[in-house]
Amino acid sequence: SQQGEEDPQALSIQEGENATMNCSYKTSINNLQWYRQNSGRGLVHLILIRSNEREKHSGRLRVTLDTSKKSSSLLITASRAADTASYFCATDEDDMRFGAGTRLTVKP
Amino acid sequence: SQTIHQWPATLVQPVGSPLSLECTVEGTSNPNLYWYRQAAGRGLQLLFYSVGIGQISSEVPQNLSASRPQDRQFILSSKKLLLSDSGFYLCAWSVGYGNTEAFFGQGTRLTVV
Image (cartoon, rainbow over all chains, first blue to last red; front, side):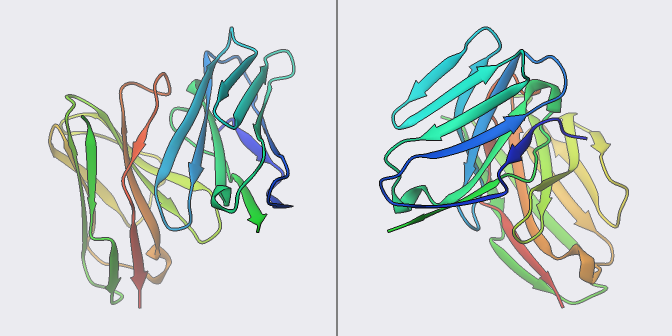
């Protein structure tokens, strides 16, 4: 079974607000990845963070990794309606298995 | 550059009919290939993965089968569809397991009626 589990299951915010999603996992990892899925589409890779990294940025995305707590967070700053999607995490220990994801809704 | 093609985009099939979904990858060699199913509003369930031609690993025993007749071709099949086979099917490829990003096709929406 997969390790990465996202929470919350669903998140609804207003445009311009920040969105934070969390991912917890169970064993030691080498890296953790975040993906986005727009409704009815395939997943798109967002960012990969390695176990020796604590924070990584990509545009409006900020990912943190706390290996002591076995958790990661994805922060989307200044959210836009186009950020509405499901977000998934996966670790290298997951062997390409994904959790249920977080469904983010950004209201205009 | 690498691309992944998955077709058809939508499919409506009667119960008991056969199924064949095809996925092809371009621009890379010896990729790991994956088939997933996603129920509405749910996460992805890994169905099959393949690390090479003719090598198929099944995650969940069910009414479906997969084949990899060529290095960059992955086929999902069923001899007789069930209503419960309805869902959104995604094909993906990666180099290795989880060490690099995975690339997904656009999916096939299958409705079994």
